[in-house]
Image (cartoon, rainbow, N blue to C red; front, side, top):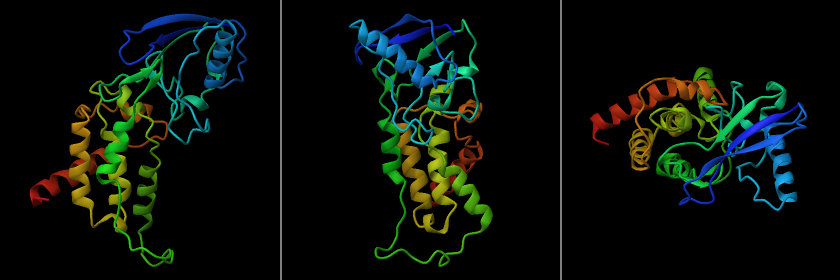
Length: 248
């Protein structure tokens, strides 16, 4: 099938950047979206043109590396799907697709569709850890965890830090990401010693990274490839308020 791509091309962080049009006349509908970009890049290299830079790694939907805006939607039109797991069979012959990088002050463009997401790393470093004794692993039943808490913790831990929530949020908020990282530790007994300190430190770091404020519009949940729920934001806010009132 024939696909027309309009891709944001930007040589470096200081370049103004612009949309460039590309025609792909023979796209196999069984290709993944990134495989389609690979074909485009092979054609560009054959013409001695600069290939399109885009993030990717595992291509299995679990590492969080890939991602861009496709016609204004983070990761494209299919819900609960990363860009690398989106296939061209979900598009039609003759479609025009507009590809742009994540747009957020905290995610500066490095080149083309690649953005710097190390702000997420600094949020995790601020409080995404627990105190554990060194030595051999404890017995699996040594610490009892209620089934509901374990399931909610695992649901929050599914966050892969791709940044789609930030890119889709009109405020460029990182509340869903930060809330997920706070919740998956705070729901478990092992995460209780730093629970209040964690909320204060990670929320403060998100603010320092110039992410916006959450206004509960829900677009983050709508585009999250791992379908993280808004309840993690409510839990983060609760932990933050309790920690603030206690003077931690």
